[in-house]
Length: 213
Image (cartoon, rainbow, N blue to C red; front, side, top):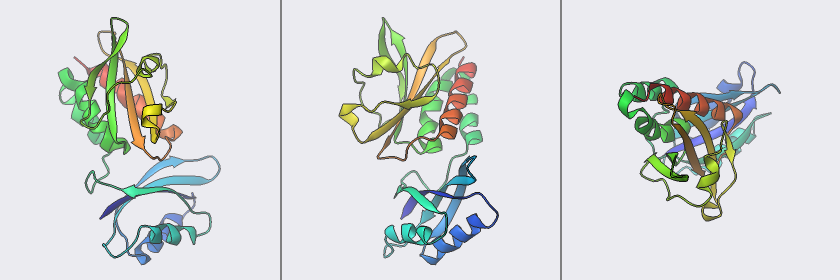
């Protein structure tokens, strides 16, 4: 069973190895580790994709991490997107390969790349928000979507009452014709979007807009 673990740990040599050893001792088989953020306070935030045998509970991973000095688990959940962490370069290759469908391909790769549950691209039609493209699990538009079109930079968005357990983030860009569009993503239950993730999202969406034919 695959799990995704987001963990904060001291950004010093040996910390990552100690954490990996602790997780291995708890029964986890680590598939991949991705550094999400280096912080100015001497901490790092990592995402760890791992497999657990059926007889091992996810709580054992949290306990193992918290026994290490300076290590804190932000979030853990089942991971159903496959046993790979998609890297930004692979995502960029996906939408630059088809410039005429760049935004559509972007929306397809964003959930796996940023570990979100869904993504959608919106634009304005006759003054109202309309969907350019959406991933299969994206919800239907709600009245709050009108305010998303006013986004000027990558940021976390206010929660929507209808999706009370979903954390939202969005960013704005333009395609080559100058058409403004907004990409909004959602995570059910967390974790919160980090500043580094928002910056990556903004960069990737802008790049997709610049190649959209």
